[in-house]
Image (cartoon, rainbow, N blue to C red):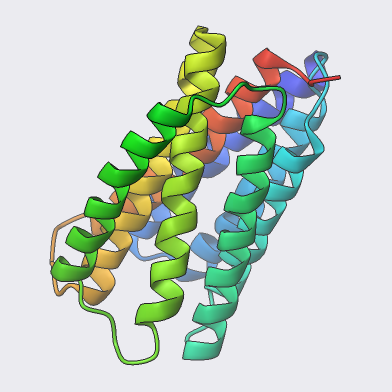
Length: 217
């Protein structure tokens, strides 16, 4: 428990320093704290006494790979990072729905709402040629992950499951803001802080909630 508490403190401290560096423009330290962010969360989650879901570990690990690949500039790195995050969402979907009785009507209804949101995002943030299709596939997987988190909450009905759902929503918010700021021409003060803050919160809430729910045997 002491090790787990230590890694929780390290994650919070690292996230705080990361946001400060994004705000102040300390590039070298920003990159270092970004690379450390998700691995600290993974180690903390792996030490959970209730057991871990391997798919969740894979989901977070793919997110870390996406973080690293998005550090350099360039179309190739962007697409590779996007692919890693997409695979991470697939893993999170598997982790959320394991042992869960899916409510088809809820899935269909929320899926229809998310499809409308995807259209709205693309209308507000037109992507450059060649990026629209990959971004569309990614957005579909992102919303599928959020819907799966909702299914998890509806099945368990616990506070821990609700935090997983909130984590899924934070992921959507983070990526939606990133799309608007990067491709939609939207300018806002502290935009980087908002994006990274929502992302760090998303990973933390998802893994914290799953650590409380435990492993499905």
